[in-house]
Image 1 (cartoon, each protein chain N blue to C red):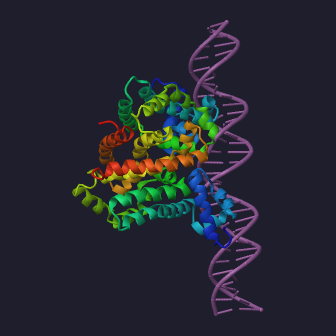
Image 2 (image 1 turned 30 degrees about the horizontal axis):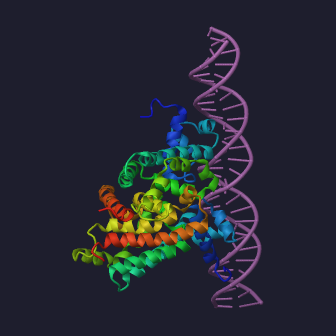
Length: 204
Length: 204
DNA sequence: AATTATTTTAAACAAGTGTTTAAATTTTTG
DNA sequence: CAAAAATTTAAACACTTGTTTAAAATAATT
């Protein structure tokens, strides 16, 4: 799997795994080096410092994270289809990377604001013109009139929270991984129906 | 404010602040001691170890966290009112303690499962018979038939996520604290309407 | 093939970690 | 008030932390 990777790529890959699992403060440079099968000094030789390596990892993870979003936003589909596909794709992505939302929200919440701004995924979203599209649809009465912030909170919250809260919910409900995963498939349908009904009141 | 508190209480209070803000690995015993105006050794004299102090803090925070929930569940009101009041109280509580959901979900997700089970808030919830009440209402067709896990995810997700995601959303939307807070008041109403409509389909 | 540049290694650095010790201080008890 | 118990302190413990150094090994260049 990690045979023909360069040293730099190996370290970055290992760092991504470890950072996501344990957070910036929850792991050491030596742990990352060991995970990559390397020496500690190599990590700093290729990435200058633990902080810098972290920034590189976050930037890459964020990019991957918004990539599927952007893709849906840019597509030439009616907003209601975009909504359905957005949820579908989010659940797909999060099933493969369940720890990423928690990682992003929690690790970046603790860093200073400049850290967040250094990673410009905001422009990427704006470039899709999704805001204008929603606004136009609101003017036509197709989409419920509410602030873009609330729409984002509804969409993201109902997609990400089920993955972030997994350990807690599993403990409360006493259910294993398999059961929870099946529950998520059901939940995705509930969320889709609920959000579509609420955001597109005139529909059907 | 913290004048007539005992040493133990002062340490616990300081530890709660620091742990919630920075996480278990994000702070040191000395930092907690300093925040409490104490010596490092005092922390371990009163709480044995950093880990134990953390467990005490988590237990207390969790208790406070589920207290308002329990209160609503036990009340003698129709489910639809309980739903409305639940959301209302959650937003109230979270406005005062916005960092708690993230703290609970993230810090406890990294700990082993036994840690979670040591804090028995599960029984507290079960004792309110809220599960039976929901199930009975579902049989009568008053509440949408869906798993309790999904209901919890919908309720908690739409209440907690807006607070957990605050730093991220603020960066994306470029809005200050005051604006975000106002947005949350609006959002609470949206969430209430959406959830009530979806969970109680026969209503109105 | 010899020289230069790049990569990798082991060792060391100072600073910070959680925790413990033993002495000093305060409070409580008889 | 004196003895005992509980609390607080400063200092030290062994260990880990991120980072650096300088030598060794490998690769690239002439």
